[in-house]
Image (cartoon, rainbow over all chains, first blue to last red; front, side):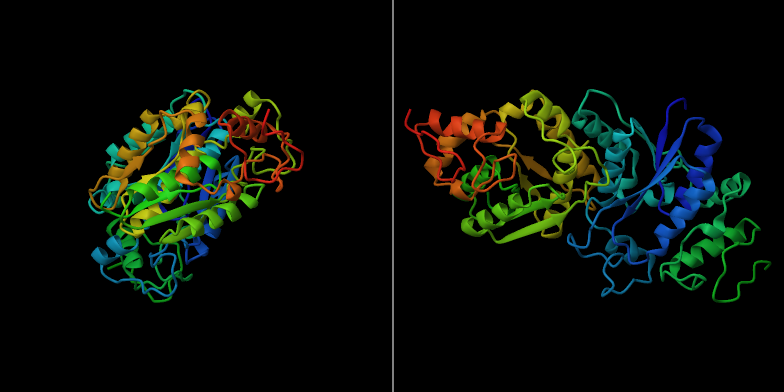
Length: 226
Length: 226
């Protein structure tokens, strides 16, 4: 791309892999945006900041979006228990239109910097449970951003990983040299990671499937060889 | 309407008139939503709260959206001067996608209450300067909200005043008994209102054109008769 770009960086594996993917392709400056939505685990934002610095982005912008008042999600409400099962997690953790708010806020910031290209990292695994991780949603959102912009200029939402499984991203990221020790995955919010929650279990399985060792420290001993 | 509704209430004349208009038509509860976007004039939010209480809404919800980090608008940045001219005001005061963020945040709150109908008060006067006050934008946004919702259910954005001039709203509001003394208009943020800024001048002209006296106190003497 010959124009500056913005990327939504959560501090997780997918958006971190996207940042390194973008670095390979993008000559103009990259602006990383992270959203402080009062996530229960502040460590995600610290990870995002470290990743942005390591990637050498032009700017890492932290934007504030207090979703606690909107309410009802265990990801922002410490009084609610984090569900163990995958299905429960995917239903209960959704604040309505959260993804749309994140993207629109990032787009607003980008516009103030003259940036009209935003990269985000939904993957194929998200497709089933999350309607707002599907391309028709992003196409519609692009149109809304175009029609709602101060001047008549398209705004593009790039989703280069939308047709890839999460399991395909790790080999790509390992090849790109993503510093995965700086990313955060653990649903319990622990560093060293708990190694027992859903999210940790998935992450560990992904590294093992790829015959790789996760550089992230875990509380429990993991057998990376078997 | 036979289902509960939400309304975006700014504390200004247009959304207040819409609230009283809606009260006439809506049997089910009305939920009012105001956005604390760190507006320079906090008095707007106080007005919104008083208006909501007077209207007897089921709930008045104040949602937080810190746009100061996004930057660049004299409406949120006290260091920037408020432009006098109408044109300058309409260009400079726009934070990118602000309207879209307000509506989406209000929609998120509404969804948590099982409400899928949101009323907002753009008027015909906004059409020229603001692309995000035109119906094609709202149609697109409705589609984005539909495609981005957790379950497949339409979300409606109602804009009953979009084809009316601001000047048509005042006679309607006077008929509906809107307590205009509780609304806020002054760009200088003063109560009593300054009576000299663009916004005050327009408001005063509107009351005079309608042969009415504004119940709001002004710092300067206004001749309502001539």
